[in-house]
Structures are given as structure tokens and as C-alpha cells.
Image (cartoon, rainbow, N blue to C red):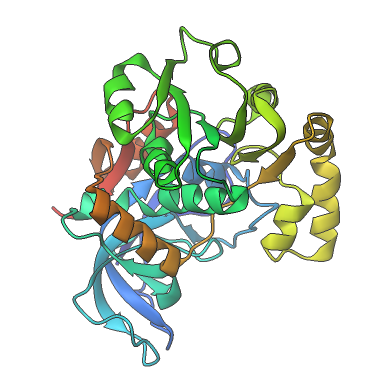
Length: 334
């Protein structure tokens, strides 16, 4: 089968190589998915550059791709909840990615049936961003009526995080490019800021929670937006000790990450707030709940641009650019 792989980390580029590899064998607890579409994410470029190797070190050659939709063509002997022909979507386990391929073997526990009414392209947009939002909200444990700021709400994350936050009963503030204002407000956002014209620190009241997708200087600025007792969950900050423990990392990494994130933890403590880092994990049962919510609320993800499988490098370059208005997706259908 055809797949796109890397053979080592590449800090200066986003190039992946098209290769022929063996179709994967299926273990007793796995399903084999014929991939119809795959989501392309900033995480893919981060993996290629080696930015997450301290969290998840990979072996090479490595087939890239973290999420996909497709059809089950084979089930392991222990699988009971799925059958050949099921239309499914998945965020692959972090240590076993490989969605940029014609077929992928996935533990059944990481898979869910696609929301009814969605195309394969739309379903491939969902797993990574929706699970990120779901798991961030689980960390926050918010009460109805609380306020949350979601940075960069005009992108793929916002398309999932905003309706999920509204389902929790939250008041949602977000920002992004002015062209996406009406679309994002239609998702349920209570207030939308044009990031080029409006500074959230000046325009918004203090909030209970922040979901940070930017990191860097913006992470420190967003901490100043928190109320006393609030929490910021970052996808691009530094991993901390609590994350390492939740993620099942060895004790020495728990100690290391506690030191690495010390300054962020101290800054949050000054504000009597909490800093958490999140690296999204696969979870089929959570994905099934998300699918049900999307069906109930008739939510369709926003697609920015579709590339063919052969254009995987172009898709990765597109994701690396700022200003996305939705998800970048690969199609495997000629």
C-alpha cells in the first residue's frame, strides 16, 4: 500500500516521502480501516520537526497522520462492537500514528462510528480537535454559566471547541480573523474579537477558563485574563508534572516536566489560578459521545481546503501558514 513517511526529524522543513509498505496485520483487538480521508494538523508538523519527542519519542520510518475516517475492512477476533463495512473515524493512539496511508490498523477502543449525515471529508476533520476540546473541558470541570476564552476560534479547533463549550453551558469568548466572524458566531460564540483590531486583555472581562492554542508570549498574556481560581489549559505551552502523571510517563519525566514548567506554574500561582498542559489522547468512547452531540445539534465542521493524497506535502505547508478558516483535509478517493 502507499503511505507517507518520515525517516528522521527535520527541523527545517515539512517534507514527507511517499513510499510502498506492507498492508498492516490486524491484532485481535484491532480493526483495519481503509482510509477515505485524513485530517492534517499543526501536530503533524510538530512531530516532523521533533517538537514532541520528549513526550512521545517515535521510531523510524514513521508513517505520518493522526486522524482519519474510512471503512472497516477487517476486524480482529476479539472485536465485538464493530463489523466490516462500518463507516468510522478515529484519532490514532499517540504512539501508533499512521493515518497518511491507504490502510491503518487501529485498536477498536480508539474508534467510533461516524456521525450520521457527514461525509468522510467532514468526519476526518473531527477526532483530533474535538477530543482536544472534550479533554480540555474535562480537565476544567466547568460549571454552567462560567466563562471561557478560546484562542484562535476561527480555526479547526474552534469549530469543535465552541459548540462543545456551549453544550457545557459556558459563555464563550474567542478571537480570529474578521472574515470568520459570522461563521464562528453561528457556532455559538457569545463574543468574537478581530485579533488584528481588538486586544482580548482590553476588550474582555476576566474569565474562569482559557483554552490556549498559541503558546509562547500569548500564553503568558492569556494568564492575565484569568479570574482568581481560574484555569488555563494549553496545547502549545510546556508540559508539566501533572500532565506527565496523567499521560503515564515515567517518574523521571514527571520530575523533569515539573522543573520545565516551573515558571508557568509560578505565574499561575501568583494569580491563584492553575496551569495545565494537554496532549490529546485517543478515546473511542469519548469520540462516540462527540458524534452523538454533533448529530443532535446538526454541527458540520468547517473545511478550509481539500488536497489529494499525493499532495500531502502541500497540505502540511498549508497548515503551517497562519489564518486558517477551517480544517485542511486529505482525500484518498480519486
